[in-house]
Structure formats: structure tokens, C-alpha cells
Length: 441
Image (cartoon, rainbow, N blue to C red; front, side, top):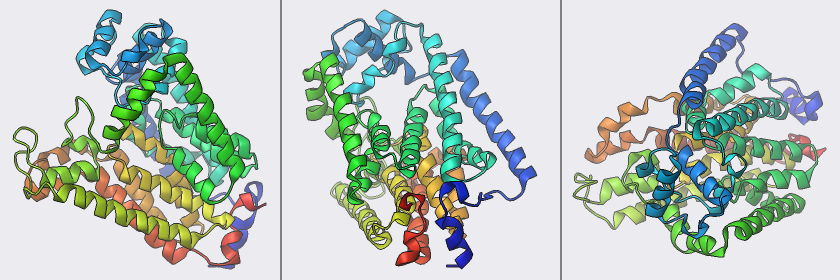
């Protein structure tokens, strides 16, 4: 590794050289203008003018809680849809509370009394502020310019568009993760843990970061996260009652983890997961999957276990190679973020905003070591954001060609493979890696 790179990255954030990710400023500004316009026109404007799917279910659950309704029946889909009709929120036939964890019902309680469109506008404004906050904080973490950082976030494309349009809370969760990492770099472990733990009971993604810090034996971060999770869960039980949480633990979360969701066919390619892909390839269903590649149902669970097991083993081996040195934190969090999305039993486009921090950390780490793989990762990430997914649907249910109907899954797999390859071939050993993280100060 060149000595100059070692010196630059060894400095604390205030002294690090600002990395120019997109060297041509004029091109970067034009691109930023285009992706900003795309997000505004396709995401923010629709959210300000009409209520689409997903958000009505969040708002209905919050209104049931605010009016002290029968929260024990939130997972009762016919009853939940009847409440949507009673409140006049959204399209009841599409509504359900499954498979969300119980604390999700508390998210919109402060604005539950507002009309649906006004409530969505409030959420849109909050998400827009969180997007700006994410750009500012991540710029400080990476020591990138605001232009480069904004481009990184907005290159997530359909992820940020659909998070706005559907009123999803993932931009807020992404900011919480970024704030947690920023607090970690500033030696505020309790605050870092609180940021990571705040939304873990609602959206599970941040628990991966807490798990990594446990591996690193950063116990104050883990304790801060665990206590915050405990407070949120206890508040949820106190407000919603234990029976709802018992239903979640006994009949909801298990099906969620294997990609079996009520009112959604387990064969749907919209899940973009290995679970759905191998079900499509090997499991016959007269209605949902009449043309599998091979009718061999036993191969479905076997293939899922093999591929996910191989990915986990490669991840563990890479984390061991990185070790517990301070400089290993950034690439480890980056790799774990990609792996989490890759192994999930089902993801929506909007969930990919959670990759803002992981991809930023991984790309920054590799760029500062002169690895061209950083641009491959960035390009794959941008393709995920702007891929015309409608073109992939033509391959759905066409035997082995069904694989081509899973572009997001394939791109995530390519990012994972490239990340592992680059980390194995570019990771410095010994004391060099210990110099690369400001948290070592």
C-alpha cells in the first residue's frame, strides 16, 4: 500500500484529505441535477399529491392505537381491512399489518388524527429533512464533498423514490444508522448504541451493526443499543399489550424469515431473494409456478441453505482477515450491509436506502487504497437504483431463464463477490490496518 495513502487515512476526520469520488465537477453537477429531478418528480411530488399503497396500513395501525382500539387484532387481516374502510384510509383490499413487528404501530401515532394525505405530507417532509441530514453526516464521516455524497445517496434511485412515494420510514432508519456511526467515530459509544437500537425493533437492519460491535467487544455501544431496544419493546408491550407480541413471535416472524407473507405469493419475483428464486426454479404450483426449471421441491431448501451458507462462510472468513483492528470497522460494516440485503428472504426497492452507509464506507475504504473495484461497486449500486425492473419480469416463470428476472439479487451478489475479492486483495496487514480508522484516536 502506498505510504501516502496510509498517511492520509491515518489522520482524524478533521485532517483527512477530502476524497473526490467524481473527478469532473461539471459532470457531477449535471448528474446530481438529473437524479435530484428524478427523485422530486417520481417520489416527492406524488407523495404530496396522492396516497399510494403501504402508507395507509401504517396510518391505520397508528389510528387504532391512538383511538385505543383492539390492538390484539392488528394481525387479523379481515378485521384490519374493516378498520381501513371505517376510517376511509387507502384501499382496504391491499391493507394489512403483517409482517411488521408490533412497535411499527407506534410510528405514526403523533399524526394519526390527520387526514391521510396531510399525514403523508408530514412524513414526506420529515423524510426529506432526514435525506439532507444523511448527506451532511455521511459527508463528514467519509470526508467527501457534499456533491459527491448527495450523488451517492441519490444514485439509489428507485429506493429513495419509493421510500418517499410509499411513505416508508426507511430514510429515517438510514439516518439513524449514519448518526450511530458518526457518534462512534466521535467516541460517543452510548449515543451510537442508542441510534443503532432505536429502530431495530421496527426494522431489523441495524442489529447487524450491533452484532459487529459485539464481535469487536465495544460493549458500551452494544449496551446502549440493547437498552434502547429494551425500552422500545417494553413501551410497545405496555401500549399494545402482550397478546399482539405473542402472535408476532409464534406465527408472524417465522413465516417472514422464510419469505412466506400473507397476501403475497412466495413465488413472486418482487422479493428478489434466493428463497423466491429457488422456489421458482424447483417448486411446482399449478397457479403460481406452472413451469419450474426442474420439479424437485427438495432442492429448494437445500439450494437456499447451500448458497446462504457459502455466503456466510465467505463473510466470516473476510471479517476474520480484517480482524478486530480499528481500521477494519468501515469495510466490515460495508460488507455486512450488503450481505444483509443479499440474504434477506424478501426486500423492497425502498429498503435499499439502508445501503447508503455500508456502500459509502466500502467504496471510500477501497478508493483510498487505489482499488478500481470501488467503481465496480459504485456502478453496481447505481444499476440497482435505476434498473428498469419491468424488463426483467418477461423472464418470470420461464424455467432456468427465471434467473434473469432477479436483477437486483444478481447485482447484490456481484457487489458481494467484488467486495470480498477486493478486501482479500487490498486489505493491509498488521499495524497498517490499525492506522486507518479515526476511531483509533
